[in-house]
Every structure is written in C-alpha cells, then in structure tokens.
Length: 423
Image 1 (cartoon, rainbow, N blue to C red):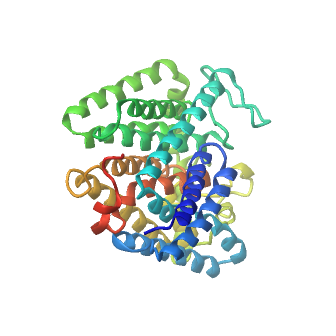
Image 2: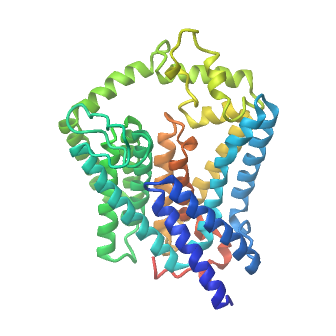
C-alpha cells in the first residue's frame, strides 16, 4: 500500500515526465531539465518502495544496455583523447527515460495523460510548422529559414536544423498512428480523431522539412502499418500511401527532383558528399580500429585523415551518416554487437506483445503497435543519418521504447497492475 505522501511524490514525478515528453517536441533544454527532476524523484521512489526497475522480462534488455554502456567506457579509455571521448558519453543518460516511463505507464491515469499531452504538443508545433512553411516565419531563430524551392520554406520547428525536425516528427507521427489506428478497441471516437489528426499534421510537417530520408521512411512505415493491421485495412492504407505519393509529385516537384539528383550523387563513390563515399571511409576506419573503435567524439579527426588535404571543412563529418557504421567506428565491433542486441530485444518484445494482444496483453496492443512503428521509422532514418547521435530524436525514441515495453514489466503480475479498460 502506497502512502498518500508518496502518491503525491509520484504525481510530481508523473508531471515532470509529462513535461519532459511535451518539452521534447520543441526544447531540449526544457525536456532534459524536467527529465533530471523526474529521475531524481524516481530514485527516491524506487528506494522507498523497494522497486526493482530491472526485474522481470525486461532484464535481458537492461543487460544489453549495461553491456553497451560498459563497452563505450572501455572503448573511450582505450583510444586517444579519452577524456573527450568520455565526456561525449553524457548523452547515454537518456537511457534512464525507459525505466522511469515503464514505472509511470503502469498506471492508467499517467498513460492517458502522457499520450494526450504529447499529441497536443505535436499538434501545436505542427501548426507552427505550417506557419513556417507558408509564411517563412521563425520566431525563435535569427537565421532565416531555407527556401523550399517550389513554394514556401523548409520546416524546422524550434530545432536547430530541418533534418532533426523531420526525423523527430516522423517518429512522433508513426507512434501516434500506431496508437490510434492499429488497435481500435477501447478508444473513444473523439480521442481517436484527435490523435489521428495530430499524426496527420506531424506527417505533413515532417515531409515539409524536405528531408528525403524521413519521407521515404514514412512511406515504408505506413505500408508496414497496413500489413500489421490485416488484409482488410491494408488495401485502404496502400491507397492512402499512393494518394500521398501523387500529392507530393504534384505539389512538391522540387523534392522529387532532389531525390533523383541527390540519389545519383549518393551512389557516386568519388563524390565527397555522397553516402557511399562517406560509408566507404567509415568502413576503413572500422577496419583499422575493429575492437575499440576511435572513441566517441574522435570520428571527425579519423574521417578527415581519410580525405584529400584540399577537402573543405564542411565535408569533414562528425559522424558516419549511418548509426550502425557510426557505432562500430566509435566503439568497435563489440559496441556494434551490443547496440544491435538492444534493438533486437526491443523489437522482439514489441512484436511478440502485439501478437498476444488478444490474449495475455489484451487491451495493450496499441502500445506495442505505437512503439513498434515509431521505432521502425527511427531505425529507417538512421540508415542514412546518425539519428541515434541526435539528442532531440534519441530522447523521443527512449520514450517510444518505454511506451512500447511497459506491459512486459513483471509480466506475470500485469493483470493486477494495469487496467485494460483505461487505454
């Protein structure tokens, strides 16, 4: 039995966690300030309740995360500039988002509040994104927005660049779509409409960021959503995707032109700005440092050493434009193995939970669908960008994982923990 005083403390933690989720849509400073407060309270609450966040069926995931974190420290100490490499590992504290979220999301009232608050924040920022596109207004940056070419401007919200914005809002869109569209039971019509509207707006502004990677990832992820929804719904979803492609072709010829032009450059092994060129040099770095890598923060120097002396500075990249290659280059092949293991465990748990949505996990299928689709979108963008190295998008992924994994905590006792009637 939890005392009334501790209930109030948990309520404060729930507020701070919701503030973190909301703040992540537009301000990394606000988000991480709120997250720091939530983490402090979580430690106090866990000690007071003798709560073990690493118990149950998620123990394997936390073991993989611990192995990854330990190896990143080892690889940082093994290379040059070890102090800088260790300092660059500070972003890994974002893994704490998972156990805090899993604890809070076991309570139906917090699940509803967090998801609704997140959808509302996504809606507001997406509407601001439309203002940016049509009127070129940026209230929070001194530098002007980049023209879109065909019409309007490229959307970037309150983030530092449009790629971060596109990847964040693409991930947010698929999370909300998975939550509201895939599993239709026990969700009021008005609330579903609101969540679907928020997802649609997020898709629109993500595409209006003119990021090729997220545009393709959205199309693939929506098709995947249709597949997991079943044969009857899949045809309708494919129709929506086809209509979306036609709209983009008719209204955004500049984006289509960029696809063809940049794709040609990306496969040119001699073009310094192409993905194949970057990936080839990253692979060479991995071959030279297969065990420990070069250490976090040292990739740029190692990459620059692979370039011609007259290569301009803006071609000397700080990451490999692919999370798998970036992880291997920074932390060696063991680091890559641990990183992949984390992803495999997360996706396996979400897929298995979704399959059991009509059995043990009845009433929780939407969380598995939301977590799975949000994760897939993120992973697809990470194949051409180092999305995991982008704090703004990475912190969203950690929330998506918490939302898609919480039913697994102490699976054997979940029938008494969660109320499936309150989605």
